[in-house]
Length: 325
Ligand code: SAM
Ligand code: DTB
Ligand code: SF4
Image (cartoon, rainbow, N blue to C red; front, side):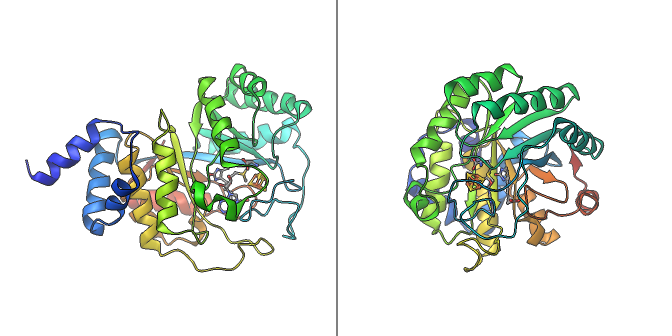
């Protein structure tokens, strides 16, 4: 066996939780072809390389959020011409979930623009989780910070995944959000873990952060006692009116490198090519799948911003010989 294959084999055989900044920087610094080859080799050892998990997102409560996340169109602090919507009635959620299922989604993710849910809001969300689960889909919600009691209630309702992102490195975090701390986020993720639910946790790149910050994000994600089962990597969607409306776009090759680094560091996690696909070429998305991304959001809208049409995604999968799972 070649030295390279031997090295890859060793990396794949252990799930590491002790990544140093230098270890991760060394991955980023690899020649592009070597990095993608390593990521693809590890990917194939752990997953069907031609299968991509498909989730659909629905915003069940939109806008008027108290938080100041600098990327987010739903913050009440920015004038983003967003239509605010109160909590959606159960019947509308069920109708949207049915369409998602008919389109081949295996997971339905419901998002709410809250700092954290009020206890009066959790009851209706729990009904949504139960109904969607009864339709035979996996369930995921993202509602902001959770208390122990709320986490337990969601677990009891049968929730499969909770999405809560770290967003960026601890060092860059203060440039992006001031109304809640990095530790607040880690605490919510820990609660979800303790309750025995699957963790969906990732971040955003392209917010003007440095490579060192991307390294810091992946270090935080992979050095948790258990890797998140699902790792969404969002490319910043620039929305007019937010503080991040203007800025330099991230080099697409650096984005692909980031996907590959996540795949190498968390070999058994689903790495989700998340927000930002609308602006990516088919070739770039294909390269991300080759670098180890194996999950996407289907549906023409993310929470509030556009996503590729389901039909376009189906055609892309067809052209790439990828099956949706
Ligand atoms: N309010 C809850 C919270 O912040 O945890 C749940 C919904 S929030 C919109 C979910 C995630 O979407 C954020 O943590 C962020 O990573 C991502 N997101 C929001 N706006 C984005 C944008 N413009 N571009 C890329 N990702 C974005
Ligand atoms: C995640 O990491 N990305 C999704 C999901 N988790 C909730 C949200 C992306 C939102 C993009 C901006 C919008 O559509 O409002
Ligand atoms: Fe609110 Fe979540 Fe948007 Fe932050 S990311 S402003 S918490 S909806």
